[in-house]
Length: 185
Ligand code: IMP
Ligand code: MG
Image 1 (cartoon, rainbow, N blue to C red):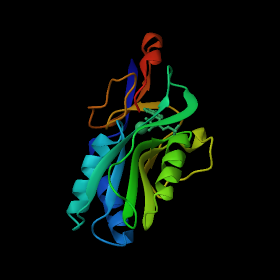
Image 2: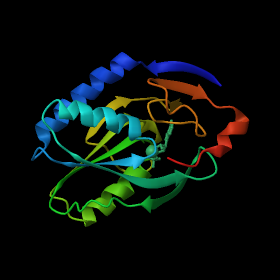
Image 3: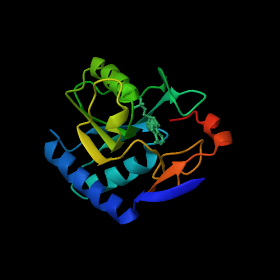
Image 4: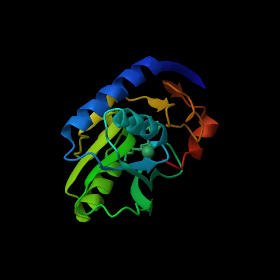
């Protein structure tokens, strides 16, 4: 797998701190419900809530499991919710967090479903944005970095299950024989 670092650890740390500050400034109260989409958002969420904690934010944290990619790295167009949040979001401030906004189908569906549950306030936050890949008209309220149309791994994102543990973001050229294993988000 050929690869190169796109976003290094220091740049990530700086940007996450900035995002936390921006979000903390917009929140209607100090105890939002922060809901991440598994699996890709787990690293970003962990850093984001800790950065927000330094600013006095005391969130409740939960995850939802949603899948979009079926047998290949190409978006299947089908989004399935496997695990909803058990938090009662009605009347609360909700921040939805995902690793990357790609076609936009995942975030758009999850946001719509969440709105039906009547939170008092809802915003979306993605670590990465690939605007060139968008298929549905959706933007995130908070974006860490824009990336070009390349497959990226690290900081929670994977290529066929590999690379989530890397503390930085790399662009990869996946091997042909591994490209068909991606399933989890
Ligand atoms: P979409 O916006 O519904 O197309 O899907 C976004 C999801 O696709 C993300 O949450 C990731 O799980 C996955 N994804 C899209 N692009 C990449 C990438 O470059 N690397 C790793 N995962 C990706
Ligand atoms: Mg994901």
